[in-house]
Every structure is written in C-alpha cells, then in structure tokens.
Amino acid sequence: MSRALLDVNVLIAMVDAAHTDHGTVHAWAANGLADGWASCAITQNGFVRILSQPAYPGSVSVAAAVDLLRTSIEASDHEFWPCDIAMTDPSAVESAALLGHRQVTDAYLLALAVHHGGQFVTLDRSVPARAVPGATSKHLAVIAVR
Image 1 (cartoon, rainbow, N blue to C red):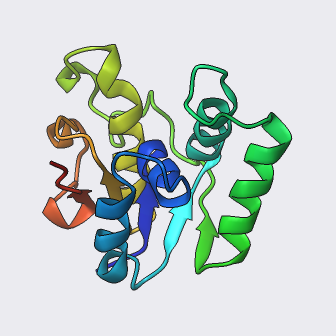
Image 2: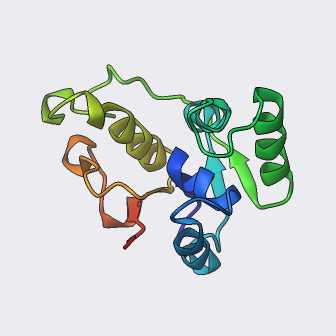
Image 3: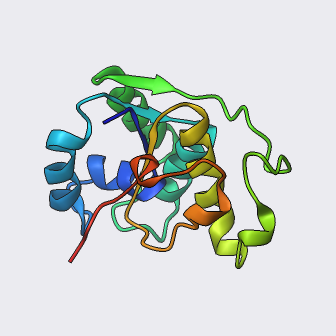
C-alpha cells in the first residue's frame, strides 16, 4: 500500500456525514489510509468549491469549507503534493488516450499519484489508466459503491 491521493468526491465523503457514500468511504479508509493520505491544489480547491456552492446539500461558506479542510489535514497523516508535473508532458499523460473532457482531471491526478509513488483513490470507475505511462493497478483504487 502507499499514500492515497484522495479524489475530491472521496475527500468530501470523508467529512460530510450526510454524503451518500460516507459510510462506504469510511469503511475503505479503515485499511486504505494505513500509509496516510495526500491532497493537492486541485483536490483542495475542488473540495472548497463544491462544499461552498449553494446547490450542494448542506453547503457552507467558503471560510467554513476551508476550515473543514484544514481540520482534516491537521487531524491526520496528511501530505500536500505539489502539482509538479505538466499535463503537456507525454511522459506524464498521453493526451491522445483521453476520450473526452471528463477524463482530463482524473488522468492528471492519477499521473500525480504515479509521480509521487502513491495511489489515486476515487469513486469513479472510468479513470483512464491507459493514458498514464507507468500506471499500474497499485496506483489506482476505485472504491466500490452501491
């Protein structure tokens, strides 16, 4: 196992007890976070953006979302990963293997996990692993939801 880079939806499900997948994500985390977890600017910004948008059930202010994120980071084995690879670098992401715009962020986050020797953890079953050179099954965990 290795440090887990949590997708935005996984991060939200971890902190929002009302989230549909809260229980499933916490059950996975019991073993899946044994080596700690990571976030990056993309996942942190996404977390704050979604939790603070009025359409989100139980939305909070931007400041409250940042505080929730800060509390989560300080209360656990967290590491911040800089977004230190380029989407334009074919050794990081093979853009020709991406089928559309919905795969761009997931491919980048998987590439970031590979770059940092970690594992990208998501609820999304359509992550384009073939677009990330060097990605293997150890670099990607899809949490099974009902």
